[in-house]
Image 1 (cartoon, one colour):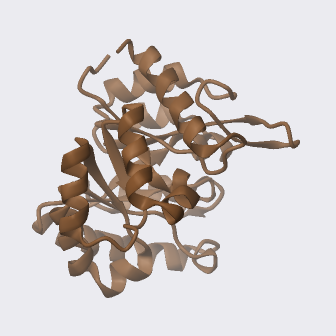
Image 2: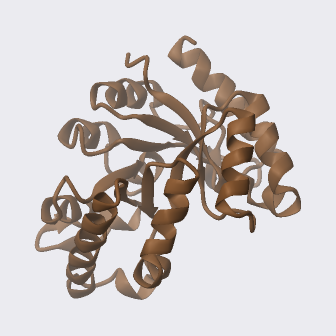
Length: 256
């Protein structure tokens, strides 16, 4: 097991809490024990304010999710903010629905991401793409979109933040992808998926669903993943309790 692998939290999980009290919510995340945080918005804090708060709480800024429109229109400003808070990764979190259903928009996007990744790398950061399930439901020239993206772009300019849950929901094996693309997936969104009391299936706390998380974590360590990032899209319990429970489960699995 890679003892250097970090435990982080995607702050989108706590979006409602952040809207009410951004600083206080970050403080609670630090109290739970998380080493790092990945942002999806900054609560209207300036970069210097946020960096001071992170330093006070001894939290590492892993990086940020930055929307495709922002990547297109204000890449330099977004890069500067991530650098100023001490982050390393800038991740495109998704793409609009209308771009997902045919090969041409995907091919154009691959070129666009490659160029954005080149600029981000020149600035000293790492650029990546975060998958959902639809990248395993559509194909580009006989390959799933996820594979076509990594096969078309260069490893120096575009990495993957693999959401292991949505690989699974897309009908594929996240462990096989970790083996295949070892070294190209520095970040994993670690989440579980299974039945919920309200009926149907949804994201659940780590260890409560149907994913073989132990095997995913072992494969992640072998694939040189740097951060396991807890994320729960929807929480059936209070979100802060959910991320606390998932953190405790993950620490136990990692033997820390």
